[in-house]
Length: 511
Image (cartoon, rainbow, N blue to C red):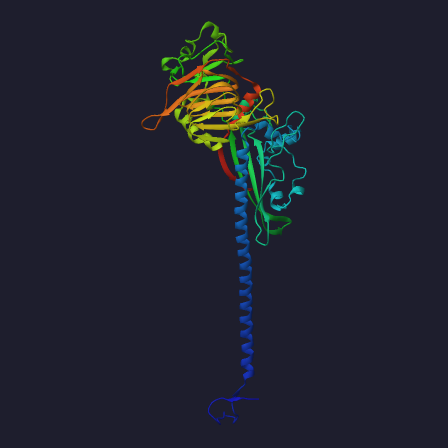
């Protein structure tokens, strides 16, 4: 064994023995140091591994949460676009037209905030986004967006219980893969004061959560996106969730009951005479045949301006509320949304900025249409229910003058910002708004209309501020203006409801 001598060469201690130190002792220390270092590196490696795994989870959860959020927003946007033309009660009751159950327990459940969710939080966190059929099996169809039950035929489901899948290009091969899915449900604002008041529910009694009375509904969209699957405490978490809730209220500003509504402090003929011939027919049923709205009641109403040109034989052709001629002012009856019609800024904003965003057809500049050259502007049969599958009303917007020729026909909502005129026979079932120039001349036309016509002059002044002006109107020929229950039902739904609130909901904040 190799040893080193301690001290000078040949030195001795008092006993005469030489002093030596063996490497065996130093090797023991080295092993200990190596073990400690190995332990430190092992712990460090374990930490780095755990940290990397945690970062992967954080990154995946963040990405998954974003996908779920985008899916939920897509669901809200989809539902909002579908609301045009649909009846709120049809949505509340599902495609079969009746609540899932009329039991007290189910009705009480339907009044809770948790009932607004398309799925329970637990189900949504664990379902298979590729095929959630088994997870949603047996769920009630109440609140599913559908076209509404017609007769004995269930409504067509538009957003099913299984939701709508969203996909992206497959990073591992060809085609696409499902990355998220959204589920949508419609419920009533049960318990709200406006709903209870509209339903006429006495104090101490509960309102019906499957009947909309105040024109307000609540839509929740739940976005679900897959993430790293975890199981802890028996609970499965395979998805990230995001839930958005919006309230929508029917726009009742244009809920007219009369077939002809003229608004203006001054109303004059568009042609030499406001009324020409005695073959026209305006029937308001239980309401005024012709209604006027006056933005300035300080100088009286424009009713006399409308009736002064009527002959005795013509007066008999305007029937409805109040005898013949059935012409009356409804300004003082306007309330809530209806009061918007007294605001020129609201009307200008409606025709310039709102209608173009939801119209099915937008036409800029002056137009001339007839039966042989017109675009498709919808179809509505007033003899059939508004939910009949044959109905296909459209919203058409013309930013300019519109001249109509013989054979023109359509149904839905027609908005004209310029002058409306023409010749020949035309048929329209729905609403016509002549808002802007406020000039409508049916002098050379035979118009068959079941629905309503609204004419008002609104133009910006020199400072760009919208102001009311002089409204012009002329009617002649064999024109016929009628009201109809089926058409009224369609017209109240064709204008998109207004969004009144928007919020994100979590399992913690959800009551």
